[in-house]
Image 1 (cartoon, rainbow, N blue to C red):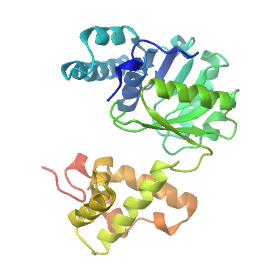
Image 2: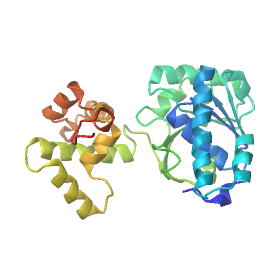
Image 3: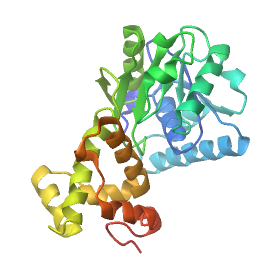
Length: 295
């Protein structure tokens, strides 16, 4: 839940934030930014995508009004700070850009190369990646010191944590300014001092979930009992196999395989039954079948 003390403005150099990508993550980040008092422009390739993203934000803010978390006046103020476009040139006066597009290094590098032509030299360029190299993305720009990872978690409005990830050439000024922005959004940032596949959260989480899958695959306990044991022992709200189904087994499998290929550590090797589940289309909650069955 956001604190209303963040509404109404910020006291640092960043005043306007551009969000590239109006999908679920981009819309969530835009909502957090406008709630933090920033002027926000959200950009995507098609106006239908932009309108869908704006509708997602408006509907989410209306729910906050209904829940008495914000007033109608505050809703209208936030809406006045938010615009959408397909024109990349309109981000020219943004103090910070946060890219939230497809998780593909080549595509991201192409976008960051374009940003050099549209943004000031002091504009912070953030990428909402969960797996890719910040330094590789930064290599596409003329000023790699201003490029930084800002890994938000889904769903953005509800998740407090953000991983701020330094690339090889990211400047301390860029880190400091980014941390202030994240704080004004009402979120808690941790700094990942050097990039590594999975950063902090996903690297630890993938290892834990993968071990739970091995325990399940070896027939040591049922999915329910594995999750119950971990929840009771650790205080987690969701067990590892429940969480796997929520994340999507295909997404999880791809992430675990990336870690396995990078580190060659057997703790990231997927159990054969996990591979079979993914190939069979048992992808978790979104398909109705994973480690649990969903009606």
